[in-house]
Image 1 (cartoon, rainbow, N blue to C red):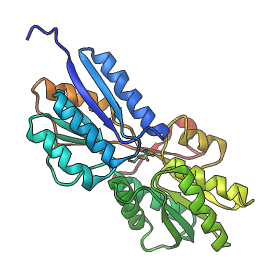
Image 2 (cartoon, helix red, strand yellow; image 1 turned 135 degrees about the vertical axis):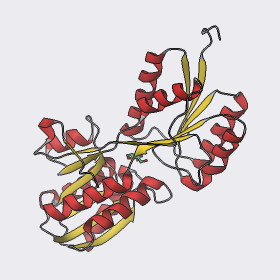
Image 3 (cartoon, rainbow, N blue to C red; image 1 turned 90 degrees about the horizontal axis):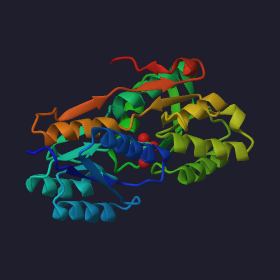
Image 4 (spheres, helix red, strand yellow; image 1 turned 180 degrees about the vertical axis):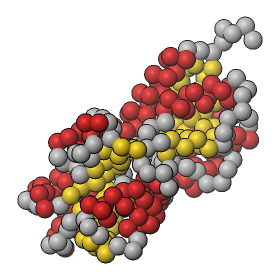
Length: 289
Ligand code: FRU
């Protein structure tokens, strides 16, 4: 009431192995610092679902005022989010979804739309035909599922063949290994569609080591200035689709919830894409569809 007490927010981050997640935490921290009266306690689950469950339970027993979670996987982290909600702690789910609707608010970009836009961009780039390798993000996480489904929709009806697909679980070293297998098996690969930029870069490194980087195009998702956009500028990626971290929106939304205001259950963030042709103009918006 006096306006002097501050809110305590628990932030459960599934891992900090990729630049994108480091950026998400930095965005959260910057927005919280600016808002003042908010203290964010960050926990890193180091890509371990069981650890993330335990850390969520710690936030619940500590009685934090609100939790932000970017869950590693959907199904196994659903019960602990419910548990928090059932005990009256609001939960903002960021980027990867859980199952069902027992949470306060979901914030993220539309991964199905991004995947579809990538598919359509690739059809256009390859004049409707070609051999593609798809390196998928963790398929027990919703962005992996949606980037896959959207992409298949985008290439539907074309003569594009996905000749090799593998789950690289969002990780660059896995993507590199999977790409080595693809290169060993197939002589003719036109393009690699990877569900994130670390994956696209891992595939590029494999192709480069095999002396085949020049004959293959690479497309990724995330589009961070220091990662995907830089790769586009360097000519490593033909396109990178932006996946905003939502860190700032999470803090803005948290403040509304903590101040007793109503928020939308679903907040969808806009995305753009970067290619050598548009990167100097800051990329381009995805077509509305
Ligand atoms: C980072 C990351 C990003 C990807 C997002 C999907 O862990 O793999 O590269 O866009 O998670 O949730």
